[in-house]
Image (cartoon, rainbow, N blue to C red):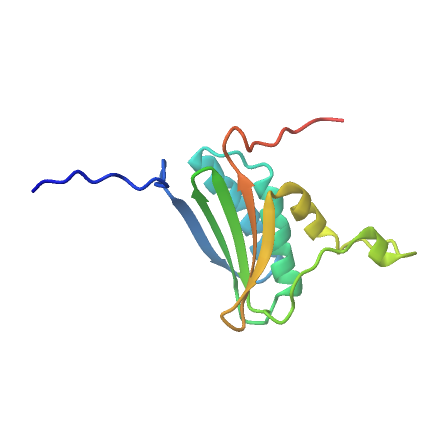
Length: 155
């Protein structure tokens, strides 16, 4: 007996794209992460804003706060549907990131430490996943479709 099978209700309408790199845990590696991510997004026909800023911040955090000598960090970009997910994995699972609010540094004018506030402002969602030991992955998601595009205004 022939039966017609229906596609699942939640099937994907487009291809799943991914890009993964292992980079040295150095300032040069962080710069390369941003540059190569921007180029990959361009090749996919996706806007680089705000993803390039998110990649830059997460990669800089990985090489500054998640660095273990002799160990690299990994950048992973993938697009599913209308969502770009950015993941940066390092080998310092014991050091979890947390945004530094201006009120946290009363009387102190710090020149760094607030980059995750930028990620929080630019990403639709972000978070941290631990494991397997000794790793942690800091991730952010950005909508890429017309409804999720963020307008850039000049001041």
